[in-house]
Amino acid sequence: MLRGRIDDRFSTVHLGGLNLDPREARTIRRIKILGCGTSYHAGLIGAGLIESMARIPADAEPASEFRYRNPVVDPDTLYIAVSQSGETYDVLAAVQELKRKGARVLGVVNVVGSAIAREADGGVYVHAGPEVCVVSTKCFTNTVTAFALLALHLGRIRDLSVTDGKRIIEGLRKLPAQIEEILKTEDQIKEIAAEYAGAQSMMFIGRVRGYPVALEASLKLKEISYIHAEAYPASELKHGPLALIEPALPTVAIVPDDDLLEKNRAALEEIKARSGRILAVAHQPQPKADHTIVVPKNEDELDPILMGIPLQLLAYHTALAMGRDIDKPRNLAKSVTVE
Ligand code: M6R
Image 1: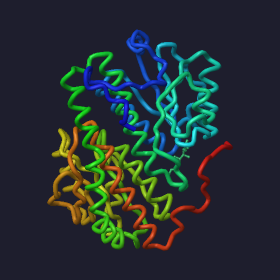
Image 2: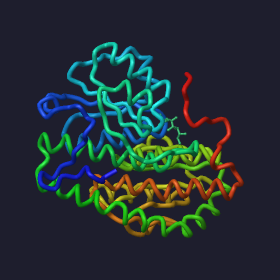
Image 3: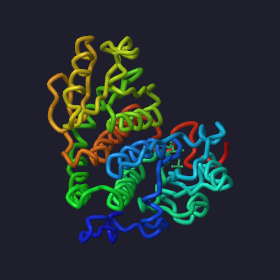
Image 4: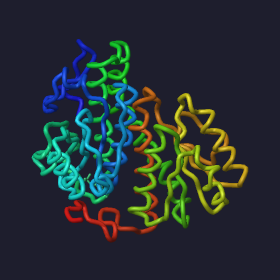
């Protein structure tokens, strides 16, 4: 993923297949990211990375919704289609509709030479290697990293300083060792999973960067364990979901050490006050949590890449404890090539 792409001299990255020269990159006024399932969640994190590093307004939308709402296609908007397989029908159809209307579409795709990669005007290959299991895990982590590279690239063409570019590159370089550290917590995660395996339902919460991580963790859990799971922005709890909190509904909270730490801690207090059980994924043990999985701190922007990994392991071990078929969850196919 990083090999051969980092340019230390200019504190940026080279993305060979992007087909977007710096002049064109400066004219982009908005970025719209389209994907389905896990790829959509990776796109949500990608939109946040692009906004914070390149200061281009960006958002993500399920491709399956986008293509049916007769979207306004704006010539100053850059569209990005995200897909592991590169064959997901809803994403491909959205790309074809956009191209038909004259839009520029890039791909962030894993499978080289796939239909979406071929249709796109250019893009970034994720290079996560073949992903055989129906459940997308390593591709999620690598897709978010690919978005970090794209955001850095666009940022350095626009207003991201050399200092910030260097900071992000240092953060990217730390990722492999930090992922190794997270994998060492697998035994702890397995024990926690054994506790949660009997739950009927689970709540996942996060704020801003943490919210798409919560969405993805909730999808992972429901997909392979069949436990009902919901994800909410932590800030929305008091607007409804707090009513669900009771000892039988565990909450998984994403609590990074960033400018929203105190806000996240306040949400944990609200949950504890209703006798809710809490599992925190955080950079330091959380006093209100029953368990904390501590992950290494990276740059704020890159933290979501790491915080998703223990929750993939949580879903895996919960499903295993429940005797589920992890590689082939019921009712699902690896590539959804039909509507
Ligand atoms: O191949 P794609 O990334 O386009 O697939 C999109 C979704 O079908 C896929 O991410 C799905 O949500 C996975 N089963 C999630 O683990």
